[in-house]
Length: 108
Image (cartoon, rainbow, N blue to C red; front, side, top):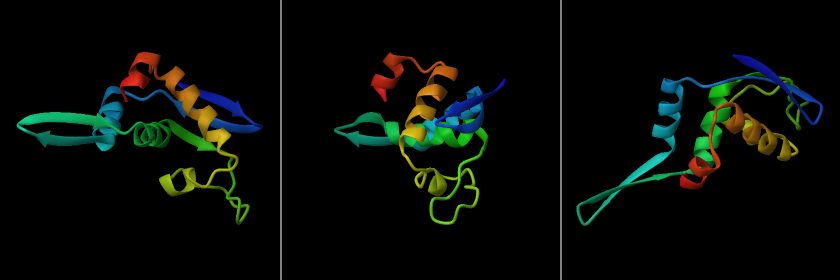
């Protein structure tokens, strides 16, 4: 399922992630530690959000603030988007689309 979001005048085409994409994103965002023979997993919520955006955004009309050229959908480009509220709103919408509950967000 694809959906076009309009955020602050920008059109962003997104899709819902599938199980494999979600698992890959979680693996990239999870750090494993062992202390006293106890294995613990900690999910970095910022990394998980970045991975969700990179996986689910298929097309956008965002421009590089330095060159006014189209931004590719990459981690480096994602971190250049101005104002940051565009990405913050996008993350909220992707969490809704992907069924990430408030409880799941608290865990990560």
